[in-house]
Image (cartoon, rainbow, N blue to C red):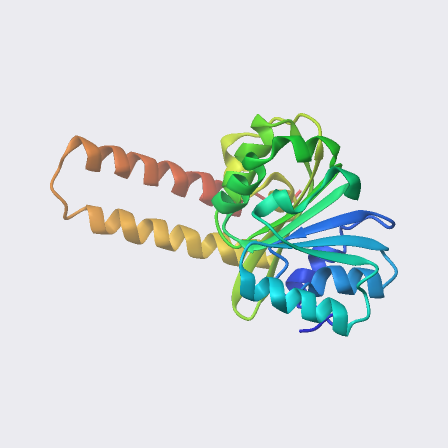
Amino acid sequence: MNAQKLSKRLEAVASFVPSGAVVADIGSDHAYLPCYLVHKGIIKKAIAGEVVKGPYESAVKQVKAEGLTDNITVRLADGLKAIQEADGVDTITIAGMGGPLIVSILEKAPEVLKTATRLILQPNIHAKAIREWAIANHWAILDEVILKEDEKIYEILVLQHGDMELTEQEIYLGKHSMAKKTDVFIEKWSKEVQNLKRVLSSLEHAEATPEIAQKKTELLHLISLVEEALNDEKH
C-alpha cells in the first residue's frame, strides 16, 4: 500500500469522500488516505492528525515526498484536536481502530462535529458502539459496507447529521448490511454465532449462579438475533 494505491479497506473509505470536501483524517499513520485523495483530484485540502510521534513523523515525511505540503497539513494532536476552526473541515475519516475508541475520540470534541457534515468511520471491531453513539448524538447512517481483506473482515459506516431509529438487531448487525446481506456479511455473522455458541457451551459446566444464568440468557438472545438475520430471505 502507498499514496497511489490504497488497501481495499482504505479505498472503500475514500470512495465515500465527497468531491471537493475538506477532510480531516484522524489517526492518519502515513497519511496515505489524504495523499491519495489529493492525487486523485477528489479533494484539494486535508488535515492529517496523529497522536503518536512516530506515525506523525512518517506522515510529515510522506506528505513531503508526495509534494503535497501545500495541500495537506500534518498535526500532532489528540484526536479531533488536530482540527482547527479555520480549516473548514466538513468530512472526518477515522479508520483502523476499535469502535469504542472511535466513539471516545468523537465524544471528546463535540464542538468540532457541529461543522462536520460527514463522518466516515471504519472500526476494526465493535461497530455496534458507533451505531449506539450515532443514535444518541443525532447522526444517521447513510451507508454501511462490510468487506474482507487479508482474512480480516472490516465494516465502514458513513454518517450524516440526522435522527434515526434502529432496532436492537439493526444496532448489532447494521441495518444497511442486513439489507445487502453480502457473502462477507454472512461469513462474519456465521462465525460470530459459532463463537457465541462456544461461549454458551462453556458456561454449561459453570456453577449455576444468577450471573451465569443471566449471561446464558444474553447469549441465547444474541444468537437468536443473528440467526434470524442469517435465515431471513434477502429482500
